[in-house]
Amino acid sequence: MAIGFDPRSLLYLPIYVGLIASAIFYLIELWSSAQFFRPRPALRPPFQPPVTVLKPLKGVDVQLYENLLTLCRQQYPIFQVLCGVADADDPAIPVVRRLQREFPELDLELVVDGRIYGSNYKVSNLHNMYQRAKYDLIVLADSDIRVGPQYLTRVVEPLRNRGIGVSTCLYRATSTGGLPTLIERLFINTDFAALVMLARKVEKASYAFGATIGIRREVLEEIGGFLPIADLLADDYEIGYRVFTRGYVNALSAEVVETVLAVGTWRRLYDHQVRWARTYRVNRPGGYFGSLLTHGTFWALLNVLANGFSPLSCAVSGGVLALRHVVAARMGAHLHSDTHWWELLLVVPKDLFLTGVWFAAFGGNTVVWSGHRFEVNASGAMVDLTDSPPIDAAGEPGEALATRRRA
Image (cartoon, rainbow, N blue to C red; front, side):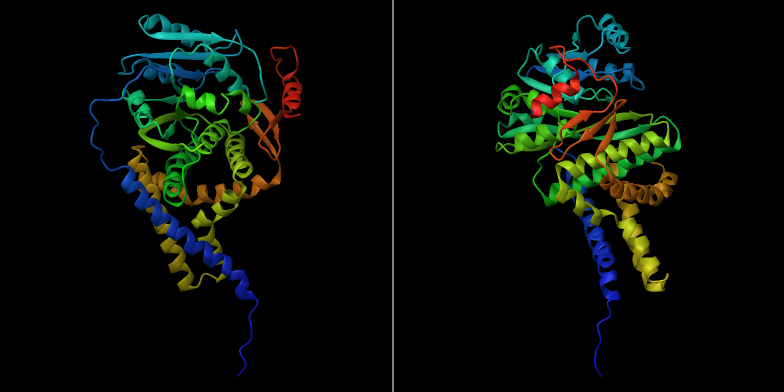
């Protein structure tokens, strides 16, 4: 009897590949996280050279005072904190002034400088603060994070090794309430950390995370400082990547910082996720396309739909979903994120929402960031599409400056 070819089998092949790949990735994430989060012996004496911390600010993030307060309470011998704003009327200024009064002994300086060097206004802020940095060890820290008292000690520890170019760290999220905020919290606590754990085993670290980047001045100068990335969307990734391409190793420190979320609306949640997805797609297109294989919930759903909810398909998909929930629970425990059991009930709809965002990232090249809408080209450079872009130091509109720099 002749054996015929069933063309439908080609339709099932991607589903089966997705199921197998995602299950393997989940196992790798569990293995990698168990290694990374195991207790580490304390190193003595600690590595504590003088540090300058750059804190770019714009407006008052949720609980900004509490976030900055944790930095002021560092158990570290010598450190300088530079808080930078571009506008003399920025509402973050009174918060910094309050901390200056409360910690008169702390080397805490406010830098008000509106000069713009490109369309990434955060990078301009960093460059302006960097001119006031006293010390040769630099730590960049986002405004929306809070840290433990040993934060600086743990972040700079990897830089004891001169072969380490960048030290960065994971972060966990705390929700201030609301379902959109909870969804983003779950993404950070159960997806982001898990993907980092996966990356530790399948590739060399060529990235850094904006929550915290520790870098020596000489290495920062070797990649040209901040100005070469003044137009680029993914400034944190670019710093890590440019350091990596010069032969340094990028290290993930033992510190886990915390970000306090207040997403508010579904639209803001969608804009956040699309910005992150399009950033990934632009900077690492091959990796982004392949990342769909990590969407186990998506493949599990397709499997039962394609097979008419057969007992075998339900068993296989159920196994993948069970493994997915184990990863989510373990990541939450490792990060000490206080993820409640009932929050895990939202993992499936959250995963499917993120799969939708994955596809939406191919639907355009605009992102929304800090109240501005940007167009991002293939190189990762941005053009501000807002009606009144800021004015740079030479009196040019920021968009014109960005165009001139790319030319």
